[in-house]
Amino acid sequence: MLSMQHSPSFALPPSSDLESNPSHGYLSHPQPADCRSSIAEPLAFPDFSMDDSLSHRDSVSTDNTSNDSPESWDGDDPSDSSPPGGGGVKVPTTMIGPSTVFQFNVLASPEPDVVPKVEELDDNDELPGLKPLGVETPGLSVSGPPQSGTGPAAAPVTVPRKRGRPRKHPLPVPGGHVKITKGRSKTGCITCRRRKKKCDETKPACQNCQKNAVVCEGYPPKEIWKSGKQKMEDARTQTPVVYRSLPILIDGIETEMDRKLLDHFVYGFSRVLTLINDDSNPFKEILLPMATQHRGLMHSLMCLSGSHLSGLNPEPGVKERKYYHFHRAIRDLKANITARTNMTEQEPELLSEDPIIASTIALSLNTICEGETNGEYRPHMDAARYLLVTQEPRNENFRQFIVEFFQYHDVSNSITSLDRRPAHLDGELRLPDFVPHAQAGMFLGVFDGLFRYISQVTGLRDRIRQRFSEGYEPAVDYQILSDAVMIDTSIRTWETSHPPNTPNYYLAQLYRQSTWVYLYRTIRPSRPSDKIAQVVDDGLEFLDLLPQDAGAFSIVLMPLFLLGCSAFVPRQREKIRKGFDALKAYSNLRNIEPAFTVVQRVWEVMDTKTEDSWDWERIIKEMNMDFLIT
Image (tube, rainbow, N blue to C red; front, side, top):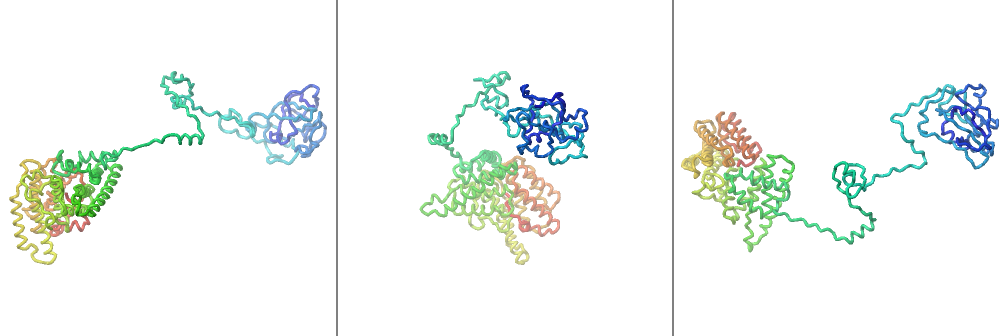
C-alpha cells in the first residue's frame, strides 16, 4: 500500500497511455487504515530537486524490481498483475507530450476483484492545449518502443489553443450515454406558435398572449394518430366529395384575360374600324350578339381584340390568349366549312350560316392589326368571297353590313396588288346601286358609288400595263382615253349625301380628290405638274379639317396612300408624313407603317427615275410586300 505524503505535483502521461494499461490505476478515494502501507521514498516529482540517480531510473516499483521490459506495461503477461495486498504500481517517468498536474494517492487492496481506476479529468479534448511542465525530455524514458516526436533533441511543443469560445459542456464520451434534446412541443396556441414564443397552454386563451396584448387565436384541433390500415378503412366508409364545375357562360370567354379582351373590343377597338364609333357600331350591334351564340365567331373577335391590344400593351398574357383564340377560330372555321360541304340538298336551311362569313372577315382584319405583309389576308378574303357568292346572308342588317365591308376591302386591295381585282369586275358580286341615304353606310364610297369609279380606274391601269408590256405605242390609246373622260365626268358630278361642314363631309371630299388623283396618275405620264400638285394640296386641306378623334379617321389610310404616291412637291411630303403619324396615333393599326414605307420608296423612285413611279403596284411586289391598305 502506497500513500503520497507530500501530495506533490506529478507529471502524468497522456490518458491514452493509462487507458491502454488497465492493470495500472490510481484511486483517489480514501481506503481503510488497515489496508494502507506507506513508503518513504519519493517518486518522480518534476517540481522538486532530486538526486541525479533518481532521474536515471526507468520506472519505480514497490517491489524494488526493474520494470524496463515492455511486457511490464502491456498487461498481457500474468506476471504483470500484482498479488493481493502487495501489487506494484508502475509509473512512467518519461514526459510524453503535454502533461497535467494533479494530486493523487496510490492505494493497494488485498481483494483480487478490485480493479484500479483512473479518474479522468473533464474536457479530455483540451489536454493537448495545456502548457507542458518544464521537464527536460532526456532525463526520462519510457519502456517500450519510442514514439514519434520524442528524443534528446525534441523541445517542448506548445499546442495553440483552439479558436472560438471555450466549450461550456464537455463533448460526450465515446460509448457513453448521449442526452437527447427534447423536441419542441406542438400543443401551444396558434398565436404563440406563429410568433415562435413559449406558450403556457392556458385554456381557452393563453396568458402569454394576454400579457403581450395580442389576440390569442386558440388551439388547433387535436389530431388522433391513425395507422395506415385505419386510414384505409375510414376512406372506404367515407362518402367521396363530388366536385361539379360550373359551365362557361359564354363560349370563348373563359378567363379573366378574355374578359379584358372583350371590354377592349367593345369600348376601344370597334370604334377604329368604321365611321360609326357609338353604340350603333355594327361590330357591337350585329357581330357581338351573333358571337354569343357562335363559339368560332367569338374566338375570332377575341383574337382580333388581342391583336390590337398587344400593340398597346405588350403583356405576355395578352399574346398568349391572342394565339389561343386564333388557333381555336381557325379550327372551328375549318370544321364549320367541312360540315357545310357535307350537307345534302334536303337541308338547305343549314347551308347558310352568317357567323361563318363574319369569322372570315374578322380573321382578315386580324392581319391588319398585326401588320402582316406576306399576303396572310388572302385565304380569309377568298373564303369570304366564296361564301358571299354562293349564298346570301339571312339577316338583312348583317347582309348589308358584310357586303359593304367586303367590297370596301376588296376594292382597296386592288389599288396595291397586281393580281387582286374586285369581285364585281369578274361578275361574281355586283356592287349595290346608288343609295340615296348612303350616309347610313358603315364605310364611305361603297353605297354612294365612288368605289365604282375606283374599280373602273383599276381596269384602265390593267389595260395600259398590258399594252406597255406587249410593246404597243402609245400605251394609252383612244379607247382608254375615252373611258377615262367618262370616269372624269362622273367624278366631277359626284356629290356626297353627308351634310356640309361635318367630319364625314370632309372625308367624302378627301375621297373624291384621291379618286381623281388615281385617275390622273393612271392616264398621264408620271411627272410633276401643276394640276396634280393642286389636287394633292386640296386633299391635304380636307385632311387637316378632320378632328383627331373623329370616326372618319378609321378609313383615311387608302386616300392618304394615293395622295402620298402623287406628292411630287417636297413640301407636300411633310404633310403626308404628319398625316400618317396622326392616323397611327388614332387607330394603332400596324398596317399603317408598311404603307408609309411604300410611299417613301415611291418618293425615292420619283427623285431618280420619275417614269417608274407610275407603277407603284410593281414597286410593292419588288419589295416583297402584300398587305391591305384599309
